[in-house]
Image (cartoon, rainbow, N blue to C red):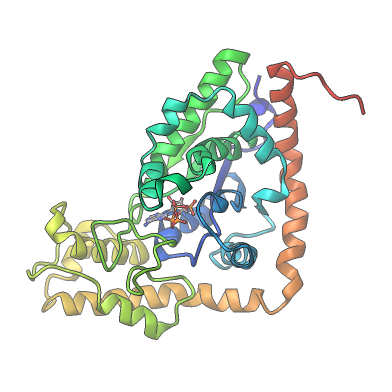
Length: 343
Ligand code: AQP
């Protein structure tokens, strides 16, 4: 039986990898929703550092980015008095449950994951790590440890969420009801922000070969302006949402505008009805993005003046997370037939 019955509130779990500078895609697809949903759910927000070692990385960067991402969670509105904010590797149950779930996850399920195929294609075939293939099982462990009800993520994580559900259902079928089956929570706008330099591809923090690809949360106003004013568009003039791949650049700018500003698609299009062209659209996008990021950047600066604050908070919150995660791991061990160690 899952511990669902003993939960006080429904639970949310989500995370971001400390694998680069957080982008407005990460903010709109994930963090912005988290800040809203923490008032409706018991929330666990994790800096998923174990995921970040599945592609080549620099250890010093990983350490620095882990702190930076945790501070950005708070700067984006996560309230540490009501949400648990912690680092994945600080709660050992994440690694351990991954191994146990590996035992019941068919390899064919992992081979089908598009993120694995995309990321593997960017590397030499013989240097792709086993961890990259196994990434979705670690993600399933993250989510299932907390008996999570809902996972607020961007659209790119939909397939991994499906796999988490499949793994949980398979486990429950094999060993008896153990895990809550989580649902994806995808925002109505901002769920798939595209690259400013290439609006056919997802905006990603790990794409660093073009300095005009992404707006980062800590970019100063002049950089935000430069990046957005150079965003790739088409040769037309009509400012309207569109599924046409030729018009993906303008569509992306409108999505960004809507996600920061609010309002329906119709209201956004009406707002630009008298615009003289894409230059006007870009100027307004610069404005809403700069204004939207300003309070985040101010809060981030405040939070990071005290070097010890984030580390102390992460230590406290890891203990809080472990109190929920460890009983799930113990239940899984028991269900799977492991002999309990005498203490
Ligand atoms: N472009 C995006 N639009 C909307 N949401 C997005 N997310 C990522 N990119 C966009 C959401 O942000 C969270 C971060 O997920 P992650 O760090 O675990 O990895 P990811 O999904 O692979 O994100 P990135 O930025 O592309 O990271 P890298 O480049 O390191 O792989 C998720 O909720 C994701 O949906």
